[in-house]
Image 1 (cartoon, each protein chain N blue to C red):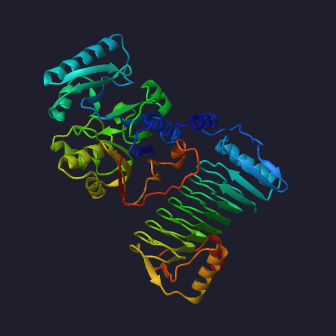
Image 2: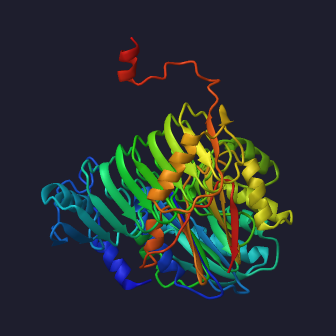
Image 3: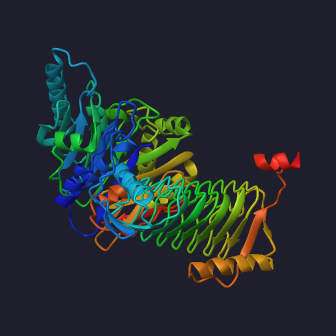
Length: 309
Length: 267
């Protein structure tokens, strides 16, 4: 089932961390397995990298912490070696980290090099995108990663009910569009031509971190964007290229888009006013941040809509 | 975020028993304000089950004719399973499966509704002032379902009776697998209109993107115009100048399409 949500503020900042937490918590019944956020703060010259070095359900044996610390130092070393100037690196939970650094080169070799460290997965990389995902409901994850005070312009989030792959961070949304900076995707549905697309994209040099079908969308969009297509065109093409049922949200540095399959098989409720756009699988989630009656509607089948902050 | 919203949300926390049933021990909260044979129920601080229990208490237990429900908060499955004549006015929006499985009530919703509103309604009237989601009036058996705004996909899927009236546009596969009843749609409809329909009729005032399998256009008769005029009169709606009628082509009819009680009559 899964629940997805998105908010974009027009021309101003908002409490996107707290807003997304309320929205996702209101949809907890759609997916209690894991919760994920893609949040956009103020863009900076530095790159922000969120990564994890172990899984929450991994055995916590006696030298677990030492191993993690060794891996973390290895990541630091590799970043330095590839030419990044590290600003800071903080532990966000037992196994997840946030690093900021200066780096002008290509992101793909950097990501691949970092992910060569055992257990490492880069969750997000960009100038303002930060992806936070973990097991549990929205309030648990928000508390664990202190997202309550996160201010920014736009965000998407996801509560997951695992159907196609494991319950772990690798299977949790949002997916960063590796190796494209500042792009992320959440998806509600199932893709039936997953293996076809995965083989195709792997041949083009893309990496996959999970067995989750939704990861295809992120990588697919990233590839189209790097070919120079606009977000809207890339999403329109995806309606033909992807089979199955889907409603998905994509965020880039400055915009938020939604696409629905040709059967409109998965729900989405949309609310727009002069200041913001809010979308969610259920109106209840939008009402969790707007405390009065609102006019909403469902986008139709094969619709692609994009808003810019 | 508004702190009041968070407080409200936490007050409404739903509990589940080991089998996953929601609030097995819930009782009607008795918070409605009763005046004569009308009542007003503020749902802001109540859980879904408490709201439904309170509605049942008022309508079945107290014999109230008319209930106004305030602050529904777009929650799912409100005002369901009411098998008695009564009037309910819902000030606001509903989530999914609102007003399902009802037999008799007249319900007026001033907001919007989510998916599957009035699912399997046997008789009664449901009027929605704004938009509706997909699967509106799924498996409708009788009564009138009126949506003044637009509706999503698969409106009246598996409809077996009653009338669905839509003031705005409708999405794809409208009238999918429809078996009986009428649909009157003022605006445009999406692809696959009346796909795999068995019987019944769909009247469309706007453009049709494409017809579904075995759906054909039929000629409008005087009784069709009369039905539309009468329904639009009742609900005080502006009707488009002309309608086109779509029915089943009956090319795929190779099965026994009778209801069990009709089958007995034939035999």
